[in-house]
Amino acid sequence: MKTIKSTFLFSKAQQHIPGGVNSPVRAFKSVGRNPLFISKANGAYIFDADGNKFIDYVMSWGPMILGHAHREVLSTISKAMKNGTSYGAPTELEMQMAEQIKKMFPSIELVRMVNSGTEATMSAIRVARAFTKKNKIIKFEGCYHGHGDSFLVKAGSGALTFGVPSSPGVPTEIASLTLNATYNNIQSVEKLIRENKNDVAAIIVEPIVGNMGVLLPKQNFLKQLRTLCDKEKIVLIFDEVITGFRLAQGGAQEYFNIKADLTTLGKIIGGGLPVGAYGGRKEIMELVAPLGPVYQAGTLSGNPLAMSAGLTLLRILSKKKILYKELEKKGKFLAENFRAIAKEKGIPITVNHIGSVLTVFFTEQEVYDYHTAVSCDTKTFTKYFNAMLEQGIYLPPSQFEAMFLSAAHTHSDLEKTVAAFRKALSKLH
Ligand code: PMP
Image 1 (cartoon, rainbow, N blue to C red):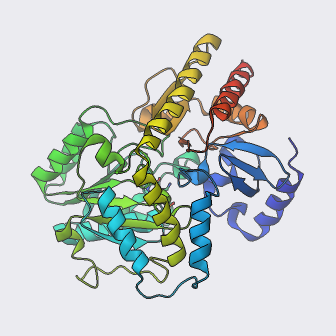
Image 2: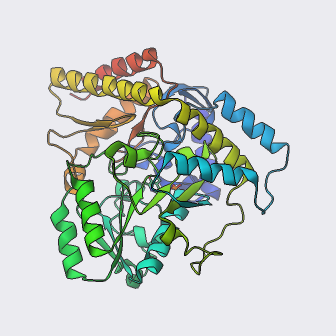
């Protein structure tokens, strides 16, 4: 595989951008190579600066559920663009977006648009704290909720990949307000609540974890969280930045039939443009300015291009229930084949899969929390990642991330991926 241009661009980029990238995981550091610089994408494929073509399983880390450069999404963006790119004033599009979100997420009664998942989660805990008049939050070790100070305490995703789950620069005073429980372990949550009686404002959780790789909630775990929050008057926040509109139209809440008090959204909601949102119960969201005293604002929030892209995508998804069944089938096809090949080759793996997301963990044990995730063999993952890339399969460059499927992945793409997996595993011996 030729990487002359990418290598050149990376060396130049490093002179101007910290680490040469605008988001850490992109640097490919944990998989021991330089990143590829992408020049274009279409459907299930991305193309790098050297002209290499890949079947993409990153899909911009989730937004591209219908595939890259989707015709209808592009066409609404270009139509909207002709009317100007930003006004800093209300638009009909924002109102339609809010209506559409509420239709798909019945637990959301009022919703505020922001510009990223990070902004959504930061704002959600602010309003939860104001509502409960309490300060502490509970999150789960290894979950990632963006790079807000309160969340960079035992965080997942890139923070976990690079071994800096707790970041310098976060004051101890702020970090001390974040309590970390163990995912899939309700007793660990109960214990923290007991020890911090009447001090916990919110519990924030990735209902399906994407940021330690894919982890699934054990039976009743999410329901138990709901019950606990009701009993203790704690705001339950589902961070559906990944799962929203991906697991089902109504995200994990529809899939598991549970209502969160607040929901944070991102990725798919912007159709590939920078958008996030947070929303939920009216009595909580009514506290947000200018209706209430909790300040939160954004110059570009509700941007007309982003609203057009996101709204088009959501409208297509809301008409295509079958899409989710098809995505589930594709995910299952990969997961089952990966398991069978690994068994045949005698290489221990665990594949966690749900809907259109999956992770191949190099371990023989079940992976269901931070400790089981970090005990996986990341050296073997690196070899596997590189062997797949060399065969034209672009995977997330970390053991602790999810593979994302889209409507654009064809059966032939999946078969090629399975064939590449077989070869990659042969090289691991
Ligand atoms: N929450 C979750 C569950 C995420 O996966 C992410 C990003 N991967 C975020 C929040 C932060 O979103 P953003 O990168 O848009 O700030």
